[in-house]
Length: 356
Image (cartoon, rainbow, N blue to C red):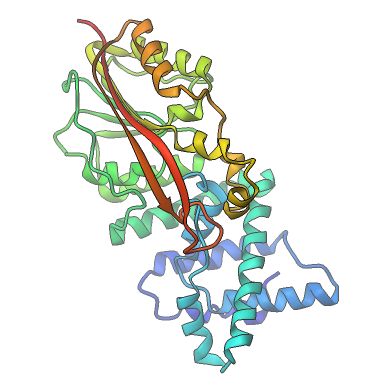
């Protein structure tokens, strides 16, 4: 897979991110043990092109790999940074614009093919060493730059602030939550069922030296956490990933896990379900990033209404409910940068307290 051309990693020289550069080398050394190119003319051409990419690769390539392999549902639009790549290329060779564009297209195609292979093969997707290299790269980058993928403020704590708080299916927002969480705040539990996320958050927590935060590898419905009574539970943009019966089971768990007076705070949207409903529109579907639809879950059209109803039926007092209709035109889900997709969707907030 890796030849002398690629193993030079010229693009990593004089990097301001030595932690990432070290992991780029280790990552491809790991893959070199088991992945290669066919011994054909086309295989040789692709290997040569791929090694040119490795030769001029930038340290943040590790984040691009992680986004496409592990968190495409959160970071759907990820492409190689050809501004950076081409600056490095031009240091070594002079290419006509047409030749450069062709080389860039081939690099992107090979890079996307590699990430699909790693994502779809458990041998690589579940490899602890690959997870470690990519999650630590994410953590180092965010700790050093503060350039968080989701730069959200912490939710306001409703309910009992003296008890621990739990965030459900934290995902990439967890890095910023660790960064913002006050040293004198209650214990914060961050939960997720993806080792890439939990390992990355543990690494970042260690760098940030936050002692009142715990990272739990949890899959609700499979291994619910055993924790003290909670003052608050945050479920932000996660319940639309669950069918109604699963949501009802989660609401029941949340009710039992909260201390009296504790609150469940829900922030969600039906955006992904609206995207699914438009998948029969061939023009719309043709614009979407390949593989994105497969990450979505079909739910009922009146998701917002049924969620409020189910929350009340469990026994919660709904103390706040607000919703708004939105229209967005964005290329965040488009396989063609700059080609916007128009989407109408509903966003809503629910605060539900467990009676004292």
